[in-house]
Image (cartoon, rainbow, N blue to C red):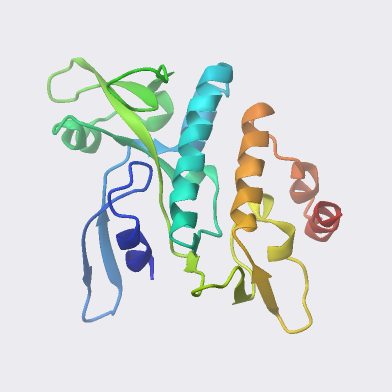
Length: 231
């Protein structure tokens, strides 16, 4: 399912790309080779301390919306949008993968800088790290790409809602309708569940990492958080 979704989105600049895939005969597991990322958006947020200003926030937001918009154009609902599922992937230099694979610098100690949206060379973020082979500092341009389509599901032709059983995702980014109790254990979901999750991420960027219902989730009062979100 994930491979099929990613094949539909092949070539989009804000969707992580498949390099190859195979089914392991003995275990029947699927192995997927994707682009190598420097880190995810969650690490970037924590490393930057959310101090990227309005222009930087707009640059990030544009990439998030472009990625989700591409999925929705193909009638794919992601269902698990969160910072950890947006990857920062290097563009252009063929040696970028080698540098990322061999660098000894922990991701938390990378130096990040938001790129100007008018920059003709492309990319959302500049990453400075030390090349362990040469000892020189290297600047990589990174673009934000959406990944992890394991929970994503396509809408049926001419349908506006998706019927799913149970719930899955990350609670503090999940829309209320994805976790509300139902009589038959099935839920009717639409593209709006992804729009809610994007809104949670925008709130997070505006409020230094907090999401609206954090204090309830931290206390384990999930039912109360859901009830409030549903009003």
